Length: 185
Image (cartoon, rainbow, N blue to C red; front, side, top):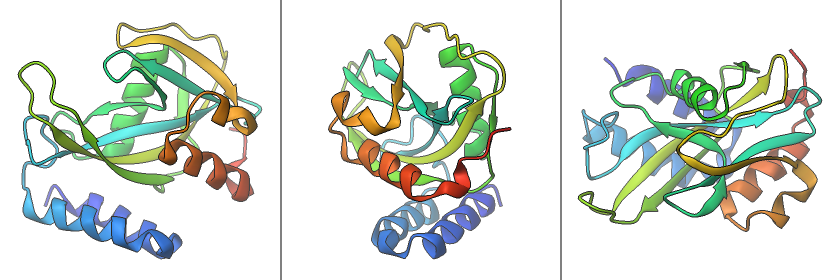
């Protein structure tokens, strides 16, 4: 029962982005085969929630220079048992930036499956990541958490100056092509 909402979100995403059907299929198969998919210690992989967090003008996205991965990425993190990935994205964005944020919509904006290298006592594993569009509600002045080396508001049009990560560039392309996401709260 705890996976039904996730599977529904994935099927809705598949209908909106049929070109990503193979990735959705892999995601659905993983969720169907792993009852503990929301737990951090499910070493086949686990579901994570991330935020494409835009400023009030919807022109900039907030990136974190991730300490462990040494890359500029979107904010996000582990579900730790929470079966609601949108709630995880909201929690992580707030914790990692100190900003007051809200979701622009309930639909998944992007999905990605990526390998996390072995580190300390953790074996290599996969993150099955769902990304949601969030926007700041008040100030754009952030604070850097312990998880980040730095945070930066990056103009979406200049994202490739910070990262060549394919999933990040895909989100920037989606953002530029889907004006319905550009609604201020």
